[in-house]
Length: 265
Image (cartoon, rainbow, N blue to C red; front, side):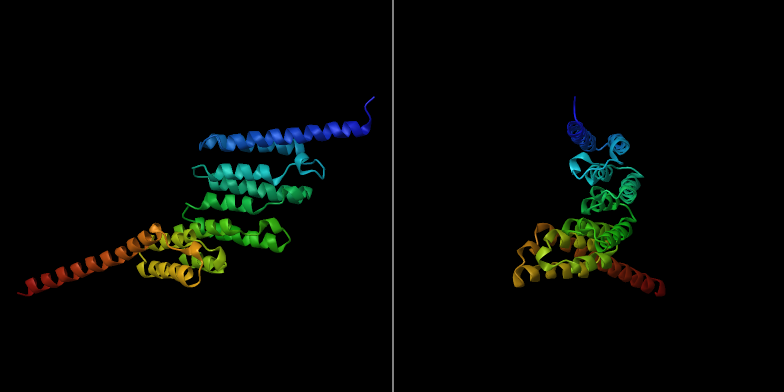
């Protein structure tokens, strides 16, 4: 006759195996391709995992529903194209938060990967900068509430800067960059901001960013801030937009003046 401890072992082994299998299936659908339907498949398996394991109690994370499965589905939606993919990623994050509050399962508390994935899904949208800033504020609130795993890291801040730059929120992008310690700044972050200035035709601002990179690299010694070919190209393109505008404006003024003289004669 099998005793209780033996049944407990079998139950734990079953739960451990099944959660890993579900995780593998979700991961496979997440990385299958960039089609909308494969992300839906990943989400459907997450729903099945919730049915089976949401109410389960254990101190072993391998036997419990955890944030990892949610992060995989969020990542799947963040890499798909479509009108509502960002909303789908955001809804998964809200489900995760709700389930954590419902069960108090510490393995279901959202982490920096959860939030970064949702921010990535908003990057190329017109309101992406605003959405990313809202999510960043939520991350800071979570961290302040004791969720140390939600603390924004360099990758998360890079995504926010990218979203702000593409949305034209350049002051916000620079504010976030200024809040990053110089030792953690990289040329990629500066290039992202210069790209935003180039898009807006702000040559002087782009040049100021390039000079800042050079100072940090050559004077302060932070070599990861050294400008690369892309840095100089972005600056040149941003300045050329201003120069071309001034040249066109000068030509128009000259044309206007010459026409005025012709009419007067």
